[in-house]
Image (cartoon, rainbow, N blue to C red; front, side, top):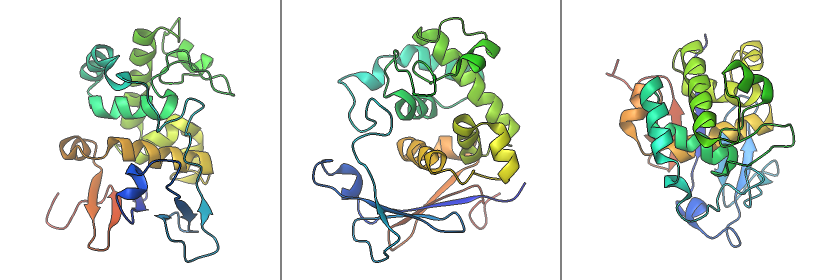
Length: 222
């Protein structure tokens, strides 16, 4: 499988932390798959990003206590399947903003947005039950990590677009939704070096502020 390098250019921390009403972030997807973010676009191909939502519930605006409401269920499933708790929480935030009743336009349901067919395959009888949904979603994520050699970006792309799309394109599919989804989950997950190493994804910040996620180990590290 070819090596994957996913690059995110973070100009300043203010792009993430500034209030949505004031911050304007622009995105450019290059032909080679590199994705750039900036608040000062210098290329006409940059497009302004919608900052209000990543899901129907709004991925930047969480209800108080949302990230800890299902901590016990997340911890139990994460330990059972050997998936970092923070990664599970990042997927849930990107998928449903911790809304157990969320339903996507395509019919995905619950916290981890399981399609009915996938839920049935995983033995989830009620996708709106937080415990069942998280159990099924984490089990599915574990299988994708194993399927793609612990390559986290590819596993996330498969979670969003399906395994066939990832294998067909031999990498993250050229779907705007999928690429933005992978970037979003990695941003939420960022900040846990131990977990990143365990899933064979490395993070590097360059002097100019460029943030790089890659499955290629740094020099001298194997």
